[in-house]
Image (cartoon, rainbow, N blue to C red; front, side):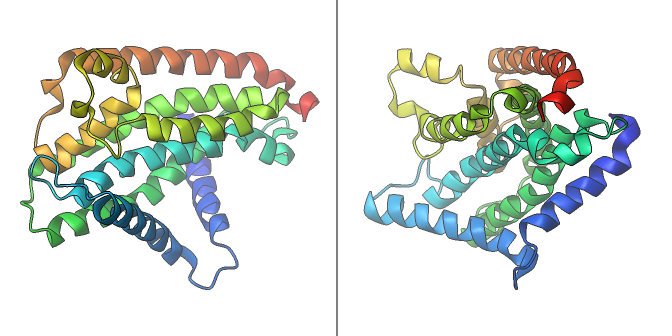
Amino acid sequence: MGGHRRLIFSMAKRDIASRYVGSLLGFIWAFIHPAIMIFVFWVVFSVGFKSRPIQNVPFVVWLTAGMAPWFIFADIITGSAGVIVSNAHLIKKTLFPSQILPLVRVVSSILTHGVFLAVLLVLILFQGMPVSLYYFQFVYYLIALCVLALGFSLILSAMNVFIRDVNQVTAVLVQIGFWATPIFWDIKIMPEKVRFFLKLNPMFYIIQGYRDSFIENRPFWDHPLLTLYFWSFSLFFLGVGVFVFRKLKPHFADAL
């Protein structure tokens, strides 16, 4: 995929532009959407449910640090599931490298992820929290997230060509995963036995990593077993994704 770098970035920019084409505010909507979303959830949980600061951290900051990685993951997964079908006109061109399409979605999602991070940093500064060099550690967790998401994206995008329900099922599973992952609630409120199973969700590692980077100032090597499990899981599914995509790729044009 390295030989198609220019094409990937060009298509990623086009993907972002297509989301806001025809709108008066254009890319400004990329800032409005996460800001409104965070505000609504903050009102519901802080005002409605009287959520208190978690570990002396303002709830809105703790919440946003968890939402930021989840929403880029969800954006990649849901967008990639239908990426082959939506680009059928390109797939039917024999020389087009269809394997880059899931990666295009990853790149475009990273670019818009910067908006969510900007909102998080503004909230941190607004709350008077100290700035730390650990902030840069999020790059490691972002790379880890992209590896995990790319593996799933390759599998889902290839399968959706032949089973169109995959796209709809993916959207449902992402919604379930959103509430099953400790984004709005602290995993420490769960019994010890339940925590073990919740940590098997690979996105727990990423979300906790963002909070370690922006809030708790903890290095990633503080979780050696969790790190080993995450990378074993992610690289396995990346390998499966590459295998499935290569096996199904020759039949894409016929199915489309």
